[in-house]
Amino acid sequence: NAGVTQTPKFQVLKTGQSMTLQCAQDMNHNSMYWYRQDPGMGLRLIYYSASEGTTDKGEVPNGYNVSRLNKREFSLRLESAAPSQTSVYFCASSEALGASDTIYFGEGSWLTVV
Amino acid sequence: QKEVEQNSGPLSVPEGAIASLNCTYSDRGSQSFFWYRQYSGKSPELIMSIYSNGDKEDGRFTAQLNKASQYVSLLIRDSQPSDSATYLCAVNKYGYGGSQGNLIFGKGTKLSVKP
Image 1: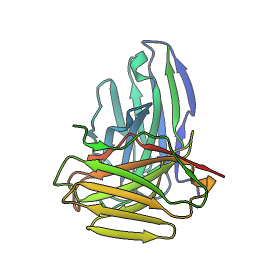
Image 2 (image 1 turned 90 degrees about the vertical axis):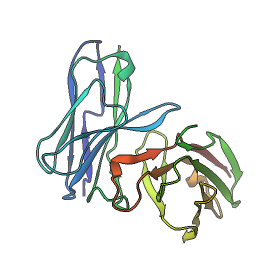
Image 3 (image 1 turned 180 degrees about the horizontal axis):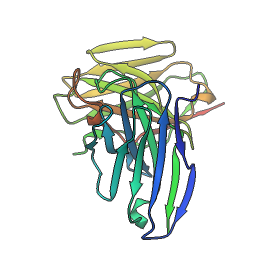
């Protein structure tokens, strides 16, 4: 059972380049999330999608765009990468947006912007 | 004041001891509280959730919540080297019916269990 799958796992970008992080879940979950994790900063929510067709900003959305392609897939795009976007990115999903629903995380994508 | 605060550690305990991890939060309206474990280089995984004042036990883990003091803790009994990880406290600002999009994480406490 794959759960939440993210690609790529590692990526090095030059400043100004663009890229898309892909995420797919096979748990038939309605809600999906993108977090970033920086040393000493904890996990911070970038964007989330309550259900197919909806997206909302989280705590740190600037410099990112998202697409909920279908129920399974939620992508994160960096249009013009900056060194400040060097981070570990986690995609996650939950059955619904309710506070009691467990969030399941993907394995993470390590992004370095030089 | 940070919304969710944890000591960064590292917290070092001997094998077999009780590890006590603490977390405070600033929003009195918060009603859902979670503890995640994250091994180095891995993704977070949920180990406990608690919604009511008091204690909640699951195996060697006990979560404690005191809403009046805005304090949540995690006790790990009979600590094992395999418990060595970073423990993240997470708080949902709006509780039941609220959005997981409002889940706020602390920075985590690194626990080291020495054999």
